[in-house]
Length: 90
Image (cartoon, rainbow, N blue to C red; front, side, top):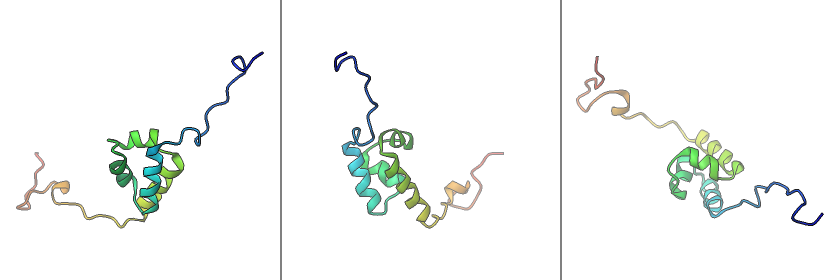
């Protein structure tokens, strides 16, 4: 049996470490959450972030999200237009 026939061990997370992981680590260390990681890495969705960023970093980003005070919802997100009328159809 030679080295080509030997079973290969799966890559560790350290083997797969990327530049995106480095960017995400810096953002999270500065207090950024999942949206900040998404923006800084130019990834478009949280699903992409979850697939491409080190899970340990992503957990810390979620922890940072949990530490953020809740943001007030805008009028439009509550279904109200500028005049205070409902924008939902009945």
